[in-house]
Length: 272
Image (tube, rainbow, N blue to C red):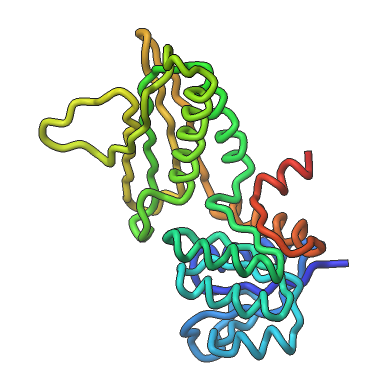
């Protein structure tokens, strides 16, 4: 039995990728697809794209199991609110939420399952594990995080870069907590976004760099340097289909879950 998904932002780059991926899968069917301002009789493949203003009606009439959303923070929050009210699960790949916006999504997760992830690449989950291990094994090493995306991406740093930074900070905090003397650990962490003029590195700084160019799908690199050596951990996505497939994997996994807040790591670990 296939999981019926509703796709928002259907004519965007990720929306199209999700619809293309869904068309090739037997475990997923498309209940409907919407976009904010679709052209008359616009379609993606064999799926007709309908106006986003009809989303409430379509959810009620087509009864999707899960919505898959890659839009913007404001529209995403509205879509998830409508879905949650109808008891429909949501997979959210939208990034750029502020703290208030994410808190609102977490509240909606009390009524229907919500899975939000900054990246649906399985390789990124492996990268996060590797970063955590490397930071733990190399206390005191300098850390720099660099991400590169296409020139149309709006938020910076990327959601994935923020997730990487959070993992680094959590690992360093755990090190400090387990070593009250502070020996061999950083006394603090501080994100430093780019550098200009006189900007010497301070102990505990984490350099953050965002690049936007061309049609680059996505690249994230973590550099650890110290003791006359360096370690570089890199993930490079060559096609948006990687994220689309991951989002659909998440939709299939989420369809039968209880209301709550989930992450893509739950999907990957559940499949292991």
